[in-house]
Length: 188
Image 1 (spheres, rainbow, N blue to C red):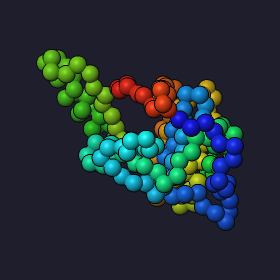
Image 2: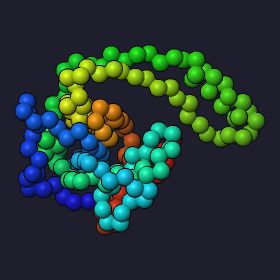
Image 3: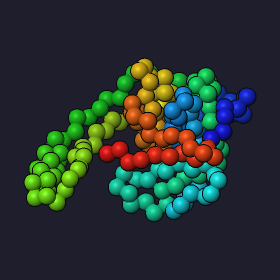
Image 4: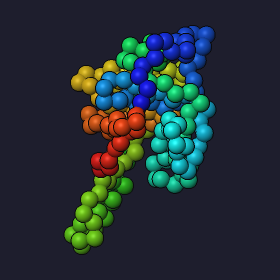
């Protein structure tokens, strides 16, 4: 992967300038952040030698899950803090998930385990939080909050317009290999 640039060409967001409405970021193990800004070129497979983010839909139905950003940069921590908008004030109002689907899935998985047809599974539920409209241009700032978390976490995000995904994990998701290629393995 490229080393941090001397100076990035993206001006910091301000009251007169919104942050790009399409983007992706990934915290790297050495503390840098890979940042891609849209528009994105969606493809079935990544283009050789071009930075791309794997951003499939949750159920893996998207036939073009690879996203090539129009602009790509690798940022040192201080550059990420300068370029990403500040996080919005306050916290989202999370709606508690309905536990019934989780318990139903758990029971079905238990039957599969007992029958020897399944060795590993992760039941899940979805939780949502409607966001105030004034947060729209500051959502990437939530990623900045995750990047700066202590103890350190590996932040990742992908957003298009008003929808997206933001997460953080203590796990190392990727390692940089020869030639700047990212290597990973399934963790679930």
